[in-house]
Length: 221
Image (cartoon, rainbow, N blue to C red; front, side, top):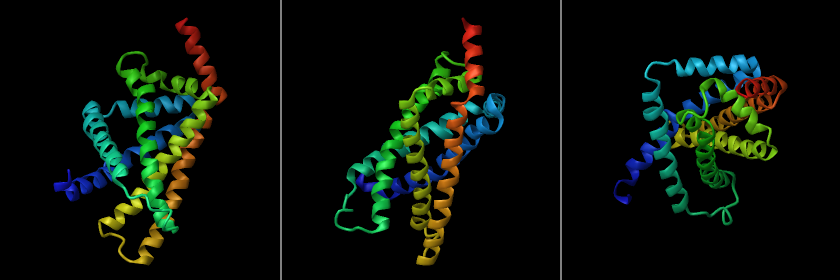
């Protein structure tokens, strides 16, 4: 892998932006519809996404394959990294270290989340209409709430800090002033996208989804 490490790293970096960053933001907005519109709003958002043309093609080539490459190569990069924050106690070095740690956490979290949701739909254990109920069932467990919160915050930090690094490494934000302004922008994005996810977790734990989940269990039973 050393022979083409420059190209591989560039592909890894680019896939972190297109399509994975776009998917993360879209996922945050979709989940936020649970807070804004309750079960009906969330189901409408899921139905709209699954009604897109070539949805399976988009999922495979626009999400899963880029995610596997970005995640697996990211684990390799984290393993190869020189963890030197004990020698240099400045902010960007800590951001570098946290970027690697959150990458590992995010990869594990995404695999777990996909198994609990999309994979269950794939094998026929769930329908798309039951995803909201599934999320409610997950968040009735306090341990899952804590783990999901950690996973979500790790994923959003990895995205926001990764976007800052992408703009630097691709020569878009060159000088100190541009990089400082960029850091403020992406800190703001981190706060906003994190809030969307955390509000959706609160919504999935709420009474509306509890009532819907109970009704589904009664209907199935």
